[in-house]
Image 1: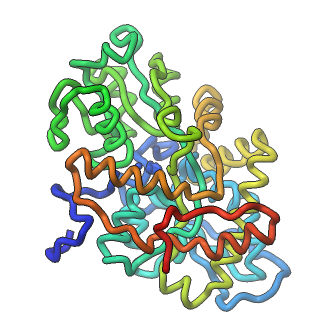
Image 2: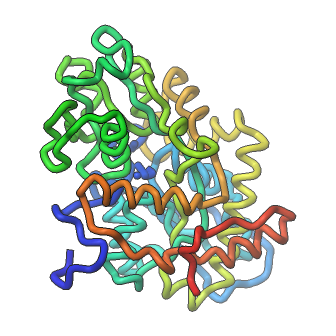
Length: 374
């Protein structure tokens, strides 16, 4: 964090705040959603035809090869986003880590990104509110507490056990620490030691660690949770059950403020594409699931097997709503856990372009929970 100690200063250097995103679950490698290695592949789709010309001839979009980024996976694979760009080229890049995607956004290597709530908030606050805006939601849910059924039969059996989270301070880590405190148990947030041992483990390592017996369970995003269940674990709790209406943000869409200012028409076009993609996904869930898995195979070289793909897909909700109130709550949970100081999130959202698109589609407007631009 910068020496100026912004209002969202972590007490220990973190790559992410409180989610998937979270907030994120690298498919193929099963890495953590937005908190692992550096940027990966780049793929250029065919040019779209027709439509009105935009103020830019190219839009660079970043996302992860994760199921929780299904809007991007399907929207790119099916050409549904580029179709709205009026002949401008959609240039997609994939990333394995939230910090690397934020760095790409800040450098201009990408213009728009699909990303979890923690790196979104972290990037916004570290730049003192100058780097990005959240302009839409994309996905909700997709996080579970899975355990060894031979050792843990109920919640009370978690005491004294070793439970993995993806990384210190990431969305799932904060959610688990918050849940532990609600059970009346004590855990030191930095070391993870206490009534429950919180073991920070990269998602790509977690299945092997569980199978070796060094972990008793994990609070993890999809598809890691379903991978563990396929290996014999049992889902003890779905995080969605802890949230109002069983919804919480795991993936946002962000844009650089510079690009939003210079090319609002392109931003609106991408949002039209994401809204139409989300509608197509929700109207055609089986076909969309296959499309997402085809995209994963293309990007990672390996599709998800059915016993992992099917339950993981069912636990993720695709939505245009950024669920802004839940992002604010996630940040507050991190504050309560003692991992960070209270952030100033005023202005992190600009949902005006999205609400314009939604109105044109005959859909209701979404809310920024009082955290939008003035």
